[in-house]
Amino acid sequence: MTDALTLTGTPALGAVATELLEGFRFDDGEGFPPSYRRLVGRAGFCRLFGLWLVYPPARDGFADGWQHRAAHLTDRFRATYEDGQTEGFDWMVEPDGDWTVARRLVVFAFSENGDALLWDPSTRRDGELAVWCSTGLDGLTLLGPSLPLALPRLRALSEPFAARAVADVECLVPARVG
Image (tube, rainbow, N blue to C red; front, top):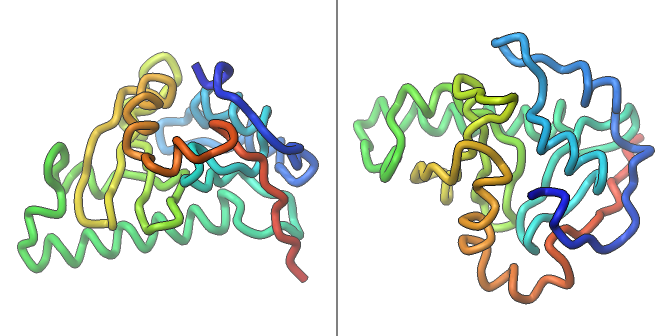
């Protein structure tokens, strides 16, 4: 289904660290989900449904890559949820999550309004990982068992941005650092 998404712009594929895209391994010894690899291989750095900034692994000299921005956002997400658990804010894991799930989640995209798209690396099925959304880092909603199956719910969550977007996927030019 990620192949069926409409695309606009020119993919900056030269900025994607393809060796990391293919070689990265989660704790289960498996790599990025095939649907994410296809999306990044087609669009590179991109905005999904007019809202979600997708972070691919970046070559040295480029900002906002998986290993930099997404790793920082994952740390921020986990610290926020750890504080929430300490404070007894059980509503933070509603409607679909729990504290154990929150500790496992890994950010792969972030919205321009502070919401996170996350994978649960413990849920691998046919190479794919379950996709979760954390709205304002204050709730956990399971969108689907894989990115392709989560896309219809993600599109609906992305309104009105998705309706105004020129295409499902907008290729972006990554910033250079240094």
